[in-house]
Amino acid sequence: MVKLDDAIIARYEHAGHRFEILVDPDAVEKIKSGSVDIENDLASDMVFKDAKKGDKAGEELIKEIFGTHDISRIAEEIVKNGQIQLTTDQRRKMQDTKKKLIIDMIVRESINPQTNAPNPPARIEAAMAEAKIHIDPFKSVNEQINLVLKEIKPLIPIRMEKVKLAIRIRGDAYGKIYGEISKSGQIMKEEWGKDGNWTCVLEVPAGIYGEIMGSIGRKAGDAVEIKKIP
Image (cartoon, rainbow, N blue to C red; front, top):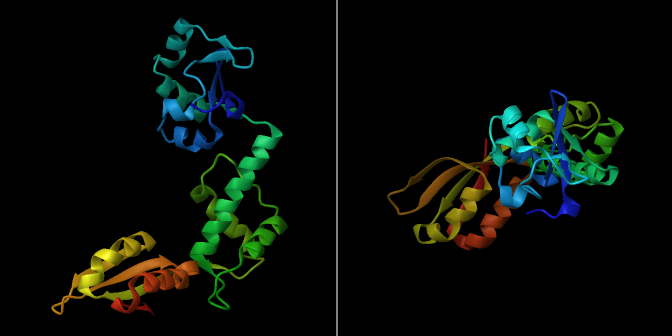
């Protein structure tokens, strides 16, 4: 279980009663989605009426309000419908982490349409600061990415884009390199040729296609042919 010192309080109030649980701040998004790992996501399997004082909520009241004693279901409802109590330092750290993830995704999946090259992370971060973008520590990157892009597009040239790569690999090198290819992007189509070679079209984030080409090339050597296609 997460350490008590690292846990945050999730609070839910209903019918004049208060219910609190201690959760891992990094697990909030996962719990909201309905996936609760009691051992790793909670600091305790108890439901409190005041977690700071250690006062437990009554079993009968818990059953009356939540209809169950299943801590997984109770935790999901409290996190989904309640409030998350963060210290200023906890909120800042979580926002900084989420901001970095958002910037990393934009770098990976976008280009500067004027240069067809990725925008540097520092440029994206500066644009976010200029746009005064607020990062919600409890919303996923995917939930926030479109809003961030909308706010920074007037400030820097940027376009989300995918690139397609045509890859041809000698049959004897297929097993060595297939895993590297499949984890690098989405294989759009693939086939084995009569010559025993394997070919595919791989769709990858525009911002890192050069990095992907280099990685595959280094691993497969002269057994691979790879090029960008329209």
